[in-house]
Image (tube, rainbow, N blue to C red; front, side):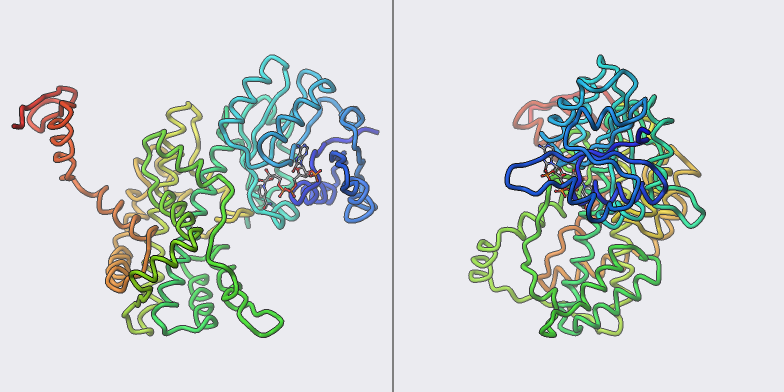
Length: 472
Ligand code: NBP
């Protein structure tokens, strides 16, 4: 009897997805390459976590492919990059027209677009699916963003929706995103938003810490309180847990973590796309750049030697919880508005016809940025799918009106006290820019025309008519 579904790559994500599928009664075939000096991952899996389940294991691609019913449905869960191309090349001779290959890794969407092109003539239906939720999501329900060859969707939908997280009403956090590389693009921006969200939470932590008025446990309490309100989200929840965690010596674990943030590429790809599409995702960019600065540990030591590292935040501790909550909420809405704007820009440019409300719904469960307020994002885009900017929707406009003054207060006190807040400062700067009918860019146009005769449009002439002035 043949298997219904195949998974290539028994790493953290792959093995948990296989167990998730097996729990749902799906008969799965698995493949992992054999490497010299490493244990046989397939054998180890079948003897360990995969024991006693309807799982067939292979270390040979031909046998693996032949074990699958037609049309084959194969999920690649290997390291993004060359490994995906290697696996595709290896599988291709054993596949037939109409077979489906899904790349579920964090692939660069440009690679996904290329692979779709390369596979077009072979008749293989290729899908790039962003999967978020880490190990826990893979095992118990992830947020899944599939896009690519739409002919594949009907066939893979039951399987992907089975392993997806479910909303309280039972709806799966997995819907067809669109054509081309849209699935991996949406996952990339999801991660970009995650960068901004995490950076902003870290800035709030820094504010409390540098005010000198909170112990780790008290900060945990503040985040727990946030998590009972409008900021309710996975990232806030784990922040409180992290703050409370102590090691075996009774020391707070967080205090022992080196303050140099790592990254794997999706933040960088988001920011590159922002530049390519002319979409101002400044909060994501600042969050990415903040990770770079954090990594320059030695440079920061020199900076501290030369300028001193003192900083403070002057606000009575009793008032801080509520003000920080509002400030973070305002900044978060602005970061998400930027994130949805770049999705909209890419959708227009590539003709993906993205359903932004649906995307917010997919992110509502299973993924790292899952948050209660995404329901409101879905509502805002359902009410008006051509919404110019999420900030302008009735609901979020009102939320911003009532919370932005806290963002101003926190930003000014941080600026005065010398606390670095790149993501929150840039959120405020963006907000104040988008409500400006008189931007200072007339001066920039005049300067460009002065030194480079780049010409400019005039306020007293129709758009598209260009003028040049001899400024000297
Ligand atoms: P792991 O590092 O746990 O597993 C990687 C898998 O890729 C292993 O099965 C490995 O086989 C295989 N592989 C590699 Br590495 N190079 C290969 C090659 N050249 N040919 C064939 N197979 C190769 O990664 P993971 O965390 O499971 O992530 C898998 C994908 O999912 C990545 O794209 C990742 O970015 C993405 N993702 C991860 C998470 C997460 O939270 N971890 C979340 C969402 C998405 P081997 O054992 O023989 O080396």
